Length: 572
Ligand code: COA
Image (cartoon, rainbow, N blue to C red; front, side, top):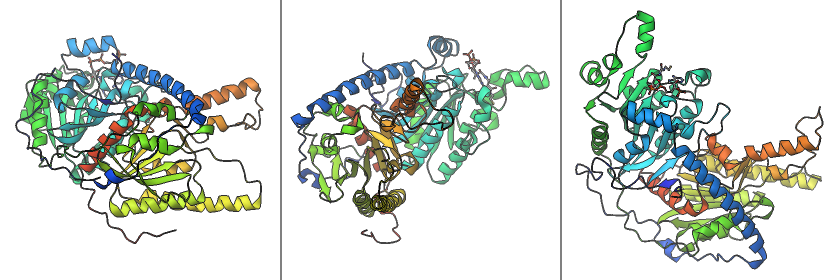
């Protein structure tokens, strides 16, 4: 069967405990009622002119190759640490595989997996899914973040990329105020890389710091000890608000039996040193004893039902589907940025009824701004349609502030072009300086907007313009890439052969080709996602579903209460 997209069904009817929980609070049937007006916004024409048919077709061919690569990688990461590690995990250690655990933990509904390709092709090797699955799914109707070790990948030990993935998951949980569940099954730090894991601010200790801060922010955290929690791993359940341990499977200790033996000469079993009975009856490090894994996840669900959270309302709002087939987005995903099709063709295939209320339609036209709804949720769209010129940047600043004043989440469709060549004249230099100032204003408006932001890289993510378009360093709540996307300071296609990296040693033709190839490889979406510069690669045809899910997740928090604005909106 073909691999599914990032947005997955965790599997139906194959679980040991019922997934509909009779103890959970009843769901409210009232929807929030956003986006009613969107039903009368003007419809965007989605017609692809015959003049551009060849571009559309070339993009489609490129997207097809990207889709195949995407599905191959998805299959690869699903195999976790490989066959023998899976056998060791399930047969010798008698544990459930991480995806089966999630089936028991989460409601029987699709969940949003984050960064499944993180950890592939790193200098220290392949670490499938960075050794831990993260994502957002519902438990008893409440959107929760999950962070679940995959012990088939080197005993669930933490590589630098695993730490980065966990920290990003915690950051998303904080930004979106999501209760968080940790499924801990980890041998602690991956020792050969300890220097890249321990000392720095964004290294392992930050996970525990975040746990305390999240708790102080009233973001509840629950841990299930479903394997080893050794060394650093021991702090995760101990710092969680409520913890469950599975009998004969879960252990918590700072140093395991081999270290005790080495230090004291004493032979002690893992169970006696830090097993379920010890921690639930003697140490008090955990709060619930579960005889089996299935009972542990069932108990975790019950704990979530005590959070006194309002579950997301059952969606009753009606919305129109776009007028155009989502698969056509593959033909609009730019392969070559020298000929990018009108961004409104993409907007029209993402938003409800292909309806879009454009703002400042005739000003700064290389940026498109306006309101639309995605699966019934009102959003302000900011979309590149060429260079971020002076006028386009001012338009972006103004629109971002409007959305911020009204509490409307922002959706950025990022497709920035590479820096242009040095100015040939004083006039041109003045124009560029003015543009710089306007871009700085837009960056400030984006950075300070307190509404949720989602960024989707549909093409190029190059240079300073990508910051104003809410690139990674501008902290969007979620950031996804299409597989055709390119992420690099400069667009590899625009780097001319005579731009040398090393002035001292001129390159021959082979050297130049190799350098460009390297630049191309390092700017690919999969390269970016392997390093966690984003929250995952998504296929163009799945985008609407993913964005709709993000907006539902976001709407669980009460961001609608307008944030304090220290001043009025300033027209620039
Ligand atoms: N660093 C690097 N590699 C580690 C590791 C660590 N801390 N812990 C385990 N591994 C590796 C093993 O070498 C093995 O690699 P291999 O598959 O290439 O042979 C793989 O992870 C699985 O370990 P294994 O011991 O075979 O599996 P297990 O299921 O029997 O036990 C653990 C898993 C995690 C319970 C056990 O390996 C363990 O206790 N590890 C030491 C934990 C520790 O002391 N951590 C201190 C960190 S500061």
